[in-house]
Length: 303
Length: 303
Image (cartoon, rainbow over all chains, first blue to last red; front, side, top):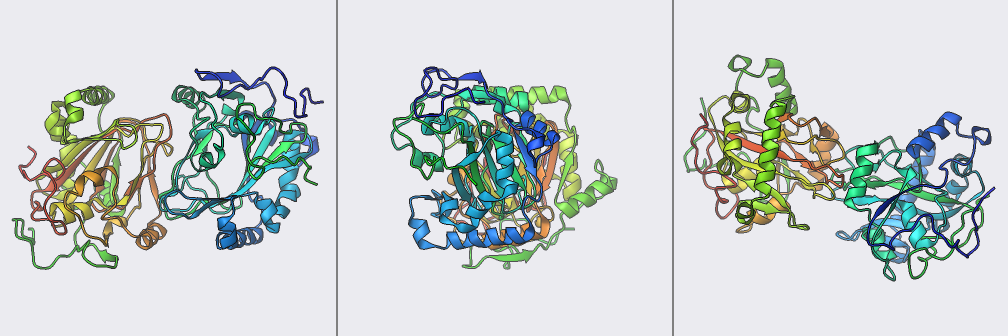
């Protein structure tokens, strides 16, 4: 069914060019956002349609209160492990040296490995992408209170295309809230419908760019005019909800988050599923692929 | 009716000590928040009661659309004036050199001088404070989009007491929205009811502290434990509303704002009215008073 090559050779034309020109551009997305149908389950046609329109879908109480308690305890355990803090897969806050994110957490923690394989999780990813899926990236984000930093507007796909060689936007992310998300603790903000437009960014990716970009995005940043057009057209949704809510969002959603001066952390588990028909090749706009803990090169499907 | 001295001599005991001890403390406020009655007008008793409970009150459409247009044009004019940009009363963004605030704007601009004298504005201030009032501080805030900085939690009164010698919390601020306030463009956040608790802060005020503190508050910052107690008790209100909304808030409200990555600026005019029965003396916790464009020493009532 897929029309694109999935080996390491790239097609000669790139439908999603970025970081190559000197002018930004708004391009139409050439691919669907939803590949499966309600018959594949567990999402209803209404939920799939809503995902198609807005680019995201919130599953209330995706996990139980008991499971939440387990994930939170695991979060604390990981943050308190000095060996993990020194691991290159762990990112610390610029200002405070506190743990901000731990990547490849489904390989570090059996608790989160199990979550990835959970039918409530991987089942939805398979349904949206209409194929088997593998984990392109996973991480836990701590987002502490009292001044946790912001994340500027970006499309994840722009980065994965440019730096990881992901051919097309056929990936979906799950952000599972481990704490309540309020408008005042740096919740995710999405421009609903923006996933149907691809913002081609200016600037070249320097070698080894990934480590800085995980703390603060600078290259691959959408220009102010494009952001204004998208925000005027689509508005901005604040993605709030209680702990246990699972947000599935398309890889090309324009999203970001404000800082968090509230006392309440905004922690989550973040898992990126990519279609096995969309495996990564050579980067489209970077000297070499990012490390595998940020962008996987093992395309083994989740079973 | 006032029980306190209002000359430059301070009472020997300080009901609102701060920046003197090594431990923070939560102290009960010793003064009312509302001094007038509905009979004084223009606010109803219900509005006054709500202000007393929450520490703030939003007047919808405090000014007309025509007036708004005039204020916005004046905002643009001031930002484009190179002499004003070089004036010590103008504060620029750390990162971008854009104008962030212009102080003493009611002396710089006749448009805003007239706003201060407007009965819709000064009438409410007189009613809340139960006396004639003077302008302790005025400014316009530009709060640009695309990354305007945050403002950490603070009580204005803590600063005015410590650094300007304001004896007691008998001052009220008006923040008149010149642009729409959304949850996503760095709107003000207030812990409703927090104005009845005074957070005594640790740390000493260095000489000339004011200029840094106008960009980013560091001394006089409430400690995390006190903020957690207040947030757990009172919650956090996002103060949103269309341009033209006038927010009156008590000088001891615990408030702050997130940064603004949205494309939409959050500009406002900010006017602090202090009771003529509460004029400033020597600072309670600083080597010398701040410059008069930040904390007035001319106590002439607004007529």
